[in-house]
Image (tube, rainbow, N blue to C red; front, side, top):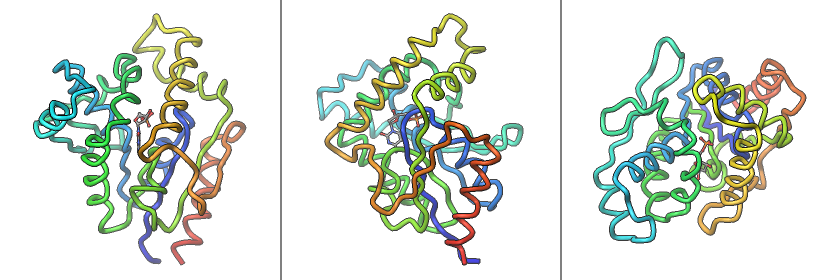
Length: 225
Ligand code: DC
């Protein structure tokens, strides 16, 4: 079977990373959560009070950022490292979620992240999830999946994911953040979130993780023939 590139895009919190991670495990492929890279850049900018409106300052700060993924045996996935520090937990906090879309709009930020993502896919055998993977990062990916789910289902999933870490968070706050990010992500000028013309839509509102995985796995195996 030939090695392929699998691009998974879709709205916030609709299970893209879960699906990408499961697919990568089944196929023995590399899994890359591209959103983690934008989140780590956002964390760095927040920590250094970077003025997002100042292009030169943004570019200078990007020069000080080194991103890497390090495999975490216990989790069965890679953790995001920012300049050698494991920031996997920090980048999932609300402060980063509330600022990441504004950072992801910036041209220099996108060029910085996309160049690294494309390098990771050179050998194929990769599953990457994000917003512009099938359109900008890997326009020639053999399999493109566009994942969608009902906004209330997504809010509930995100709530369950973060409620232990952030106990004072409400469903309304989460839904507001998701919808705001979706709006900014799909209306930005550079690489907005949109379904690639050759992407297959997967609405997982009423699918279990196993059902969703089986559907995607069958698509992948067809493309790998
Ligand atoms: O997948 P996520 O929710 O962790 O992504 C966080 C943010 O990063 C998302 O709201 C927009 C941005 N992002 C992006 O612009 N392009 C990608 N390929 C992945 C994420």
